[in-house]
Image (tube, rainbow, N blue to C red):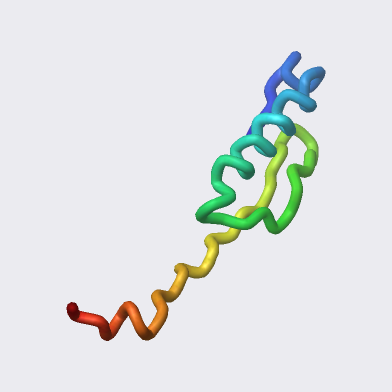
Length: 63
């Protein structure tokens, strides 16, 4: 996220926005690094969760 001009006075809003986005993505992604401000840019790292494997019993059951 990039802040311009007077937006720099409200970086807390950007941090809340990124945190809420990470919470909404919690089913498919994990938060690796919390939001961090560097200069005018705030960033965070998300990584995809591994897909859940089906149990062997339900995979081979054709009934």
